[in-house]
Length: 111
Image (cartoon, rainbow, N blue to C red; front, side, top):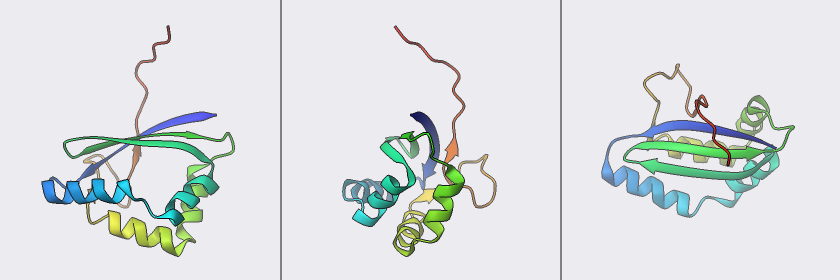
């Protein structure tokens, strides 16, 4: 099993942030199914102010490219992504069209 950590910003508007949080308390079943089908076995999203950090654990066969292709072919996932983009904004370092960006691990401690 592999882990990935990604980041994204929300638009810096308290009402939009609350609405985003609300949507994530009730994620559409089709979106959850697409996560499972892509090989994601665990996902957590954390927020401070308007910065989001996502941690995912994935099957060894998981691929971001394969997930993107599956999402592009899933009408309901595309509807969700379009809706979420109303609340999200790309990180300042993002290239055009990029959303969630991978974070570089700089420290790892195990007792």
